[in-house]
Figure (cartoon, rainbow, N blue to C red):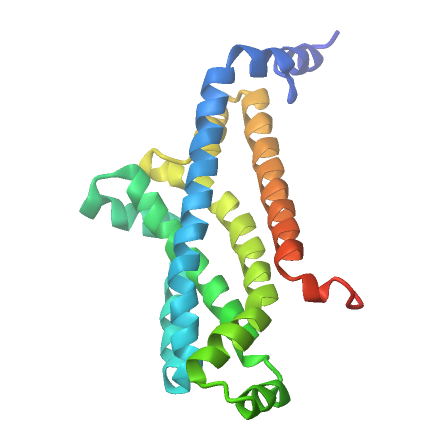
Length: 225
């Protein structure tokens, strides 16, 4: 066996013994990653829905809402997390705020597109039945915008899973901590394990939201793909 082959055998990219012996660290990092992702996407959704509704009801504000959320999205994540941390001195909260800011643009834009996409004849029919503005919004426009919101949630979730790893710059990056440690020590199995778990987490979140979207939009089940 050559020297390079011996080194590769001693430092494999996939290693069950690594996962078994380090499961406590892996599960802790995975728990951090899941917790940050879920909280960030939920908080962003709570903020995005009223902002999108406001932009829809007051079209003059649409440019401002999208512009501000878009400006936040353009800030590099490495810079954003390191800028927030000195003010809060809390690594987890700093990363969480940054993730919410990044998810806002995706959710606000999708929700607003969904609200604006309601056919005008549907609105006219509702008004003809005596629907006032609030009832029209709650019973016609918001349900119609649900598929767009779900699509935004799916995209925001996958994006957030990736961005959580950048939190390593302030010491709270979930699976990113394992990746960083693996790169520092040149431990291939640690890098691969963290990367594969990130991919699995993103796929699982996307699949779950797809199922939820299917469940909450029964009127679309018979529609052509």
